[in-house]
Amino acid sequence: MYVYIEFVIIDNLVITALIALISYRILRVSVSKKRVALASIIATIIAVFYPFIYAHFLLLLLLRIVVASILSLILFIKKAPILKGAIIFLLSTATLAGIIFMLGFIILGSANNALYSPFLEFPIGLFFLIPMLIYYPIKSLIKGVSKSRSTNEFYYNFEFIALDKKIKGKGFLDSGNFLSDDKSGLPVVVISSKLTLKILSQEQLFLIATNKGEQIQKEARYLNITTIGNNSKLLIIKAKKFKVYLDKSKNIMSEVMLGLSLNEIGQADALLSPLLINI
Image (cartoon, rainbow, N blue to C red; front, side, top):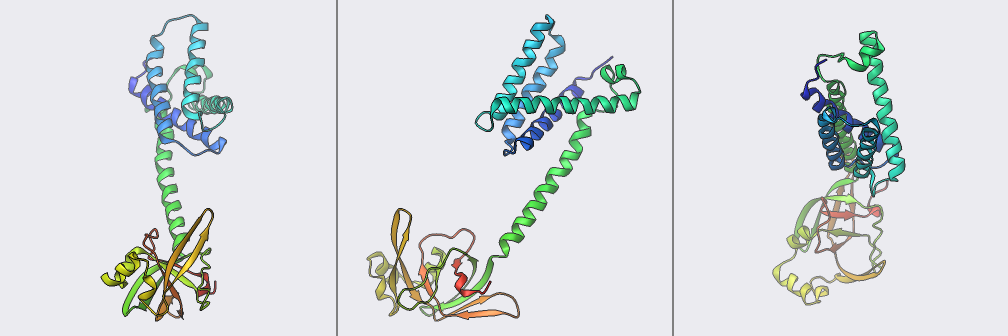
């Protein structure tokens, strides 16, 4: 019987990776691609040289135990209980080996041939690799589209006029943003540093830098923000107009106060208040 080394390499790389992925799935832990790759490479190197090792059965058994222990440490240390991971890894290996044996028996019609004869003209690893190459990209695509749709449901276009500047942007509806001006009772929309710099002149920025921000507008004042372990002040000003675009037929015009932030707000230009939109 001839065994091509490329068959051994492909089979061990793919099958070890598949067993590792199955083990992670059963353990319900996140997949570490680097660990899977490292374990597959080590298992493949050992598989290539294993046929050339001539030793007593007990020594070969000890070698297999050492290899299984090394692979288990690589895959599961600080990720899952190592012993539990090792057992699941070995059981997954046995299950996959049983499936491969069953395929060989069905194709060749003999248990002996299934054990010692190749039953395909290509590496058995390709039998598993091709579905994996199809499954994971499709899964990532579906997950990305689903996440994008889910996130986009909370983004709304808006425009406002403040300090004689007309500004447009995309706001994120923050369900936890119930900030309101304690004096006027108006909701507060926190705008990003990008928009803050657009509406403020150099003189107004200087006033803010010198803690005189209340002078930039009659309605301007500082709002105390209290969070866990932190107290800060947010300068708010009155927007002359603030329109939120829900869709082509339904838009909302609101009176709001703008919170002038000097930080970016992720991919959004502002944090919208649920008080603006009836959801």
